[in-house]
Image 1 (spheres, rainbow, N blue to C red):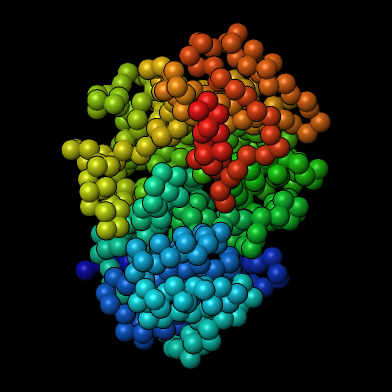
Image 2: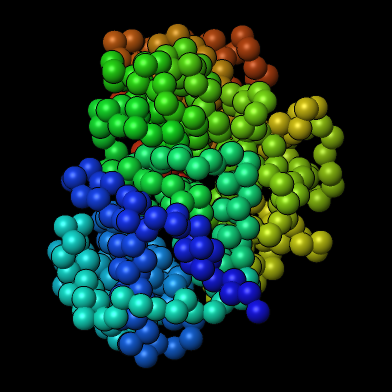
Length: 505
């Protein structure tokens, strides 16, 4: 019987020469494929020596390091469930995740051991280890005494491999349960769709507590036996310096904006590059165009979420259309429906629903919520709002919870943001809905100026009035220095709504 453990598939793709470099770090350290194999075996043996229950969760909140990646791979290898936690989470959040997931093992940074271990032990966690980004900590000290040989645990395609807590912009975070089969199917589809080839080298500059950096990037490189140039944190100068040694780069839109600010970014620097991929947040059309002009490369935008890994992508061969997320990936069925659950015609905006081998099994210990989020015929309601054009390209226009219902009319913030972002001197904007005594809800625009530009809030509103229906016009506009963002660069509209909720009270 085939072992469907995701690690088995990744391990099978390692190159024949195990002494070749698998990971080159920004501190000058190189790890061979043999190092990855041996180290993951030792950590897997340590985990298995702890006598954990079947399906035990391993919760991890540590800084990015190659050892942290090895801990992830070792968790898969030993057949346990990996639970990555954002390094920005504070005690109240960690308390919630630990009480909700009931992990058997918690791994944290040494500096947080005091408070994290207190929370973990109180919740009944038996084992708390430390791991720092300088190859130190009790996890590695204990693993050093374990054998470097390990037989990969047998797992079925439907067995749980990871739980990812969604960012929880409404209410409590939900734990999306991803199986070995969900992640392997996605890795294999992307390997073909993005034309990964022998000799590809990936610059890994993303955090690894999120789908993008942990699954899309790491699985992409490993399932292709490709070397990674590993940056502990994103440094635009260093990325530009490393581009000539690489072929693939994945980033969130903020990273592309910061790279464009580097004078060294030009066609010469990108001459060996094959593919630039963007996701996790919308890419401004201006960034898309400027990147084309500066580098001669067209960024490939794709769309995915914690619950589904990747869902759509612009084509590798063929037109990559700015402002769209391309087509549904092979094996993924995607449709746009209205609130009543009826299919919408081409070009109409509605709720995006998906089905496929990559779509998760449900939310951890939330059967009611899980049931609510799936349709009777098995489609997952993504909560994203979008449309499909006559050529099949998909455009995301926002989250359904960001939808503003003003005087009974539906207002899509992304549409208005598009008009504001096109105005001279505007760097970026966010449109949110706030309570209003007459209309129920109205729009408020928060706008950032480009460096050196001066913007007039009244003028922005006046310009919109010349372009859009009156019910879509924001009632107020504010010019600010920056927008609140999460670690993946997504604008936190919930924070903005909270800040402005009493404007019309």
